Image 1 (cartoon, rainbow, N blue to C red):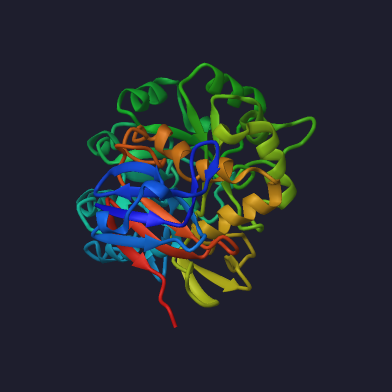
Image 2 (cartoon, rainbow, N blue to C red):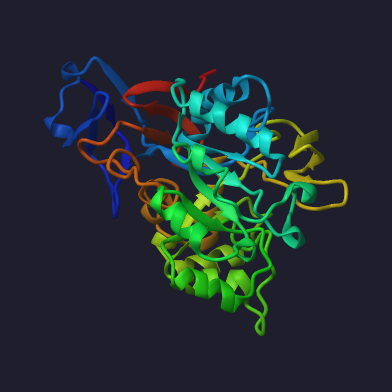
Length: 384
């Protein structure tokens, strides 16, 4: 048996003190400190007053530390991401593709399928961002590779694709949505110029849907033309990603989203690119040169590219900006994505019988002190 002592344990609706988290591969029990004896355990983590939280699930991440999901390198990039992500508190993630040519995307999906067996942060599947997008709001995606929505070439990868981002206006009818629902693929609306009325029609009359990085790569909210952003904020079926690096989404807009969507309607993501965890300088995203300076990643024309923020930072930003409770904010990076991806029976919260995926956070700056995946310590902050 293993244990974490002297931590502030973040549960679904409360933070408890004086408790010990006991685990092996799965969580065994959370017991009072007075009932615990160190001799009961073969491995002990002293949280030293830090927060003990479920491992973070990042459902939208392109890359970090110099590598990218789309790198044609026989899987080395994915393995590198799996190794480094626990240092940011991420224990599970969806490597995210971009709007490349079909063959490049298919090769990437093949590599993601193979990388699921690697050690480190666990790959739950793939998030396909495009190629079924609107060029008017392509963002950092390449316009020449965008296509109308077509399920036929996704079907062979239905076992690995868990989320697909598309513009609703690329749909000929709702058959595509029904096919995705049948295969357990979440449809996320984004990179879109769809009208408010059309967006609401698709959302209200379809299954649960996601919104890819709310407010970004879509028409700005306007009081006469609310667009996709307005529909996302009003429709209870829409669960909204937010990139809370304080650049992609202003702190006030983060608070607005929390006020309207609440705890259950928000998913915190990084949408990070290979420049994340790297110094400023020239980088790359989707085959395009990106210039990174002072925490901002932009194309040559000034277009905002992916973020360079890590998961623990976006969580801390959202906590500060909104005044939400810590259990609420942690839920947006843990149980919310786990539930929508259908894996909440195994991960996403600190409950007896669930896999022992958890993180010890410094209670002041949310620095990652330790990360455990399936009961194994995979990251420990270096001490000097």
